[in-house]
Image (cartoon, rainbow, N blue to C red; front, top):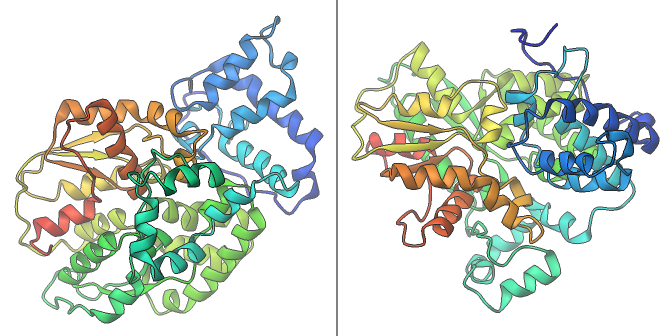
Length: 445
């Protein structure tokens, strides 16, 4: 293996059950080893705020070497990482199987796992990560919860900022009274038996966001698949654990992986494909879970059976073909390729899906939106998140498309905010998921 090799990057299983993984002296040694490679390369200087922080620490020393950086400074580097994986997937020439064995995101994850084991994750951050509990409780009082979390609420948002650390300016997703699982159960859809892909069967993994916050992505997916002859079942055992992964709570994430994989096992054995509706969740099921539970056969089977929603529709279009009847759009489309879509190493499937629409003019943005899950809404990070996402917002303003789209619903909200900050008079209020545009082109919405 050498620089410029065409070999694909590989990742090693995460040794979270090994006591050495949490040894702080060994961790510091590995941080310095990998950071030394990073500072000698600096190819990732413009990806996120982690690398400028690292390079500034090194440049501030008299020697300009990592050996003279105090270990206490490493925390600021870790804090800025959103685990987007873009350095690993798109920039670093030294990822395994290269002998330098650089995996910056998983190094940051290890640091956070040590912090979590030491009890250094704040109580507020832990409570925000409980998406299932929060979704169930907030759904019961959805109008009140949405009033309280609205950015225009000058009574509750300053209080949230003080107690939870959530920036009062950051837009938060609203809650819905009825979950996506309930909506799907109440509204069965007839399957088009004349469609070329008739006979396919899919289990939609609802994800916590679609289930509790915004069912539109799920509704559009169900309608598009039914119209194309695909039987769909909606399941939601529990959250994929991405919020806990961000905090380094690896035992909890591994337990979620084992439980969800066991619950989905009967569906897979009956020939159903699994389609995840949010790219972060698809990434967890496909790649992160198998690294946490490498010996678990149910987790491995689920990984092999899982598709991202755009990936699945493109696969269907290539193999059987789509049902006719897609109508041209009434304007151009700018698509933000979410980092966790790109990290799935499947190609620009959202763009490929949109180009199935006749005469579609699709402009693609491959830059980080800056939101980073819960990271970007926190007071300590919100301004940085806007800065990181500024190139995305500027491209949208320059292109002025009829449709602004992102595969990640949280990135979508953050992008809309970024555009509003750049140009307050802009008409861009929200962005949509590409599957919603496909459903619209079919006349299903």
